[in-house]
Length: 309
Image: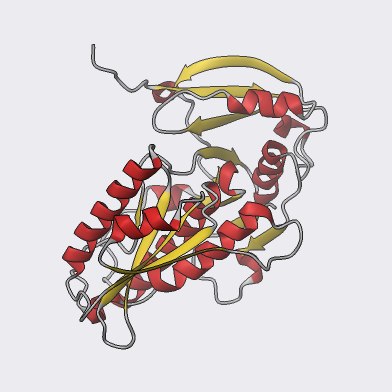
């Protein structure tokens, strides 16, 4: 019988000994986490919270279609535990039920928004999968000036590399037009040691370079290395590939399927409340917190972002 994805999500109702760190309301000590990953039920949060000495009660499976509706106005925060970061914003009735005429398209703003989304996704994917080794694949001779051919060649490269490694593994790659007019080359990141000879044989089209990132402060670990790799790759994600002949609609980057960062949805009545629950889940205060209210030029809905070490 064919496998069917479950329609159930795992709901954990919990009351902590002191409630979320940032909430001053006693009523906020009752909450529900929903964790999703590829449609499968997960129970990681139970052990995580109990390991922290938290009291977990009223554990039950619930059908996501029967989940009580969110309050009319609320804060929605998505935590990416493996990437050690999360972000959210205020949701209002007016925002969720807005109608009327669609706004006038702004191509420049749309392109900028797409670039920001892509950079966020690159950062989370690299961090969650600890992609801390950077490589570059260059064509020999006059190079390659066909973006479609590049994608075909990269798909073949990673297929050969999987065969050499013996199992699937997470990776991310981005294209770049060579500034010297040599055409396209690719930058990629992986999170494991792979023999240089295996990489060279898998590419077999030119020059290969790969290195483990280092020279970071003590304690950075693989997470810090992966974030550095993400910053490096994000530079190319933000470039205007269309100017070099990139066909419209092409992705700015490509990843190995099946390794997307897991998500934990958190809902609350204030940014402090959702941050408090995120810190409870992570078991530590956030190292960095960004708030839209501190940005004078911010023109979007109220938002917050946090990162852990």
